[in-house]
Amino acid sequence: MGSGKSTTMRLIAKRLQEVGQQALPVHERTQFHSARATDELEHWFEPWRDGARLSSPLELGSRSR
Image 1 (tube, one colour):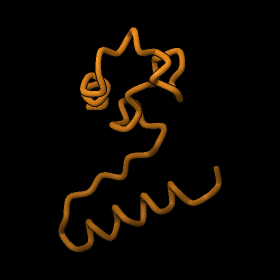
Image 2: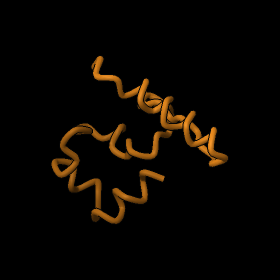
Image 3: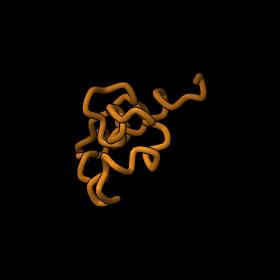
């Protein structure tokens, strides 16, 4: 919290756009964020504890899309 993640994300997206690259700044609280595959798990910060609900690391990866 307060370490500049959102500012950095916006700056990187802006710089990429300035050189003609498509870039969309995605905030960490964006719904369906690609890196938040464990949001609905009981132990969202320790997904291995919900192993019965996850059949494999591949399944966990597929949830992040």
